[in-house]
Length: 71
Image 1 (spheres, rainbow, N blue to C red):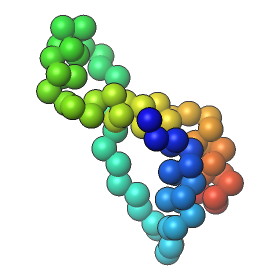
Image 2 (cartoon, rainbow, N blue to C red):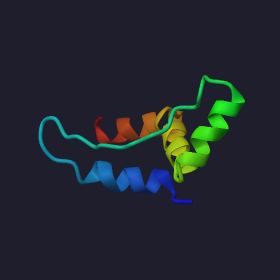
Image 3 (cartoon, rainbow, N blue to C red):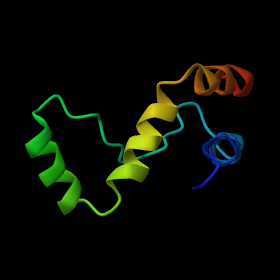
Image 4 (tube, one colour):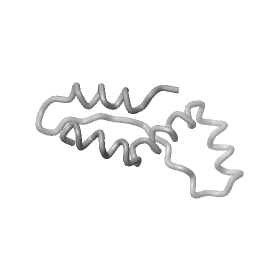
């Protein structure tokens, strides 16, 4: 499991320009019933990694890191 804080710190440190952009492909926790969610997870081999990234991006730690980097 990658350390998202270290990865994002590195990525944010490398941004340049007035409107830098980072693209990511996160997964949002499903609002659907458990059976549908299990089916989606079975079809998405990196679902857990994408869900972990979503949780990181909405965390207070990411907000703090963004502020420290000026974003």
